[in-house]
Image (cartoon, rainbow, N blue to C red; front, side, top):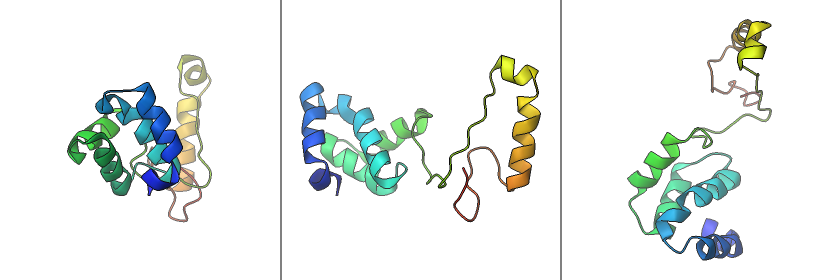
Length: 115
Protein backbone atom coordinates (compact mmCIF):
# COMPACT_ATOMS: atom_id res chain seq x y z
CA UNK A 1 0.00 0.00 0.00
CA UNK A 2 2.74 2.48 0.89
CA UNK A 3 4.71 1.60 -2.22
CA UNK A 4 1.84 2.47 -4.53
CA UNK A 5 0.36 5.45 -2.71
CA UNK A 6 3.64 7.16 -1.77
CA UNK A 7 5.91 6.07 -4.63
CA UNK A 8 7.18 9.60 -5.27
CA UNK A 9 7.94 10.30 -1.60
CA UNK A 10 9.63 6.92 -1.20
CA UNK A 11 11.81 7.61 -4.25
CA UNK A 12 12.85 10.95 -2.73
CA UNK A 13 13.69 9.26 0.57
CA UNK A 14 15.84 6.62 -1.14
CA UNK A 15 17.56 9.33 -3.20
CA UNK A 16 18.49 11.04 0.05
CA UNK A 17 19.58 7.80 1.76
CA UNK A 18 21.36 5.55 -0.78
CA UNK A 19 21.89 2.85 1.89
CA UNK A 20 18.36 1.49 2.21
CA UNK A 21 18.76 0.80 5.93
CA UNK A 22 19.38 4.51 6.50
CA UNK A 23 15.88 5.21 5.18
CA UNK A 24 14.11 3.19 7.89
CA UNK A 25 13.24 6.15 10.12
CA UNK A 26 11.72 8.41 7.45
CA UNK A 27 9.85 5.42 6.03
CA UNK A 28 8.49 4.59 9.49
CA UNK A 29 7.29 8.17 9.79
CA UNK A 30 5.57 7.82 6.42
CA UNK A 31 3.92 4.57 7.54
CA UNK A 32 2.79 6.25 10.75
CA UNK A 33 1.27 9.11 8.80
CA UNK A 34 -0.57 6.64 6.56
CA UNK A 35 -1.87 4.21 9.20
CA UNK A 36 -2.11 6.63 12.15
CA UNK A 37 0.52 4.57 13.99
CA UNK A 38 3.31 2.16 13.14
CA UNK A 39 1.11 -0.82 12.37
CA UNK A 40 2.28 -4.40 11.78
CA UNK A 41 1.48 -3.83 8.09
CA UNK A 42 3.60 -0.67 8.08
CA UNK A 43 6.51 -2.50 9.69
CA UNK A 44 6.28 -5.26 7.09
CA UNK A 45 6.15 -2.76 4.22
CA UNK A 46 9.14 -0.77 5.51
CA UNK A 47 11.08 -4.01 5.95
CA UNK A 48 10.33 -5.03 2.37
CA UNK A 49 11.30 -1.61 1.03
CA UNK A 50 14.58 -1.65 2.97
CA UNK A 51 15.20 -5.33 2.27
CA UNK A 52 15.67 -6.22 5.94
CA UNK A 53 13.93 -8.40 8.51
CA UNK A 54 10.74 -6.91 10.04
CA UNK A 55 12.10 -7.52 13.55
CA UNK A 56 14.85 -4.99 12.86
CA UNK A 57 12.27 -2.40 11.81
CA UNK A 58 10.13 -3.17 14.87
CA UNK A 59 13.11 -2.74 17.19
CA UNK A 60 13.82 0.71 15.73
CA UNK A 61 10.16 1.73 15.97
CA UNK A 62 10.08 0.55 19.59
CA UNK A 63 13.27 2.38 20.54
CA UNK A 64 12.21 5.87 19.49
CA UNK A 65 9.34 7.59 21.30
CA UNK A 66 8.28 9.52 18.19
CA UNK A 67 6.76 6.37 16.73
CA UNK A 68 3.37 5.26 18.06
CA UNK A 69 2.78 1.51 18.26
CA UNK A 70 -0.94 1.91 18.89
CA UNK A 71 -3.50 4.11 17.15
CA UNK A 72 -3.90 7.54 18.70
CA UNK A 73 -7.25 9.04 19.55
CA UNK A 74 -9.03 11.71 17.57
CA UNK A 75 -7.68 14.26 20.05
CA UNK A 76 -4.09 13.93 21.20
CA UNK A 77 -3.68 15.59 24.60
CA UNK A 78 -0.23 16.65 25.71
CA UNK A 79 0.68 18.11 29.09
CA UNK A 80 3.90 19.98 29.77
CA UNK A 81 5.89 18.07 32.39
CA UNK A 82 9.20 19.94 32.37
CA UNK A 83 10.50 21.56 35.57
CA UNK A 84 8.70 24.95 35.40
CA UNK A 85 5.38 23.20 34.67
CA UNK A 86 5.98 20.62 37.40
CA UNK A 87 6.62 23.41 39.90
CA UNK A 88 3.12 24.79 39.31
CA UNK A 89 1.37 21.41 39.59
CA UNK A 90 1.48 19.90 36.10
CA UNK A 91 2.18 16.41 37.44
CA UNK A 92 -0.90 16.50 39.68
CA UNK A 93 -2.99 17.95 36.85
CA UNK A 94 -1.77 15.24 34.49
CA UNK A 95 -2.62 12.45 36.93
CA UNK A 96 -6.08 13.94 37.53
CA UNK A 97 -6.64 14.13 33.77
CA UNK A 98 -5.66 10.47 33.34
CA UNK A 99 -7.94 9.48 36.23
CA UNK A 100 -10.82 11.48 34.75
CA UNK A 101 -10.37 9.83 31.36
CA UNK A 102 -9.86 6.40 32.93
CA UNK A 103 -6.62 5.70 31.07
CA UNK A 104 -2.90 5.38 31.77
CA UNK A 105 -0.08 7.36 30.18
CA UNK A 106 0.01 6.77 26.42
CA UNK A 107 -3.33 4.94 26.28
CA UNK A 108 -6.42 5.89 24.31
CA UNK A 109 -9.92 6.11 25.73
CA UNK A 110 -12.21 3.20 24.77
CA UNK A 111 -14.29 5.52 22.55
CA UNK A 112 -11.14 6.39 20.57
CA UNK A 113 -11.43 10.10 21.28
CA UNK A 114 -8.50 10.94 23.56
CA UNK A 115 -4.88 9.85 23.75
